[in-house]
Length: 215
Image (cartoon, rainbow, N blue to C red):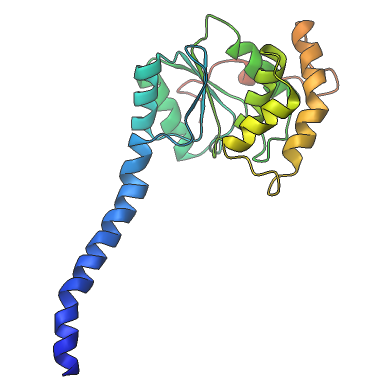
């Protein structure tokens, strides 16, 4: 009796296993190509945002929105295979790519944000895609700075958008303190066409677009 019940269940268990494997394959192998990670429009035709992207997702975004410049705030380690793949993808698509590495919680050299905003507001580089790994913290700070300093949003409006885009204030308490600490320093640097003076200057490598020779 028990053997018969088990045999009747076996086909259903096999079907369930196939469905589970298919769901995993879709979520890990297909969905990231069709639904770019945390992609969002900041300003149509000017600035876009996302998390780390597959080559296919990058192609879709570049072709649909005419992206000319990618600003990578540290989606992958600069010496990693993932970073080299991102660079080769940008080159294949004819997109200029900059790498300005910041910490995962959004902290780091404020001059990286200064330069990211300069690139984002330069018509010669637009449309621009700003992204990091998750697309919530480093990208979130950059977009909040853009909203406040370029578009005149209030801090509350910028923070609300950051939360809607995936930032969790309870998980990363340094986001808001970082924003408060650097927003006016970065604003002064932009208005003076200078840099944040008490922060490290960017190196020539950081200021230049990435290229195939950088591993």
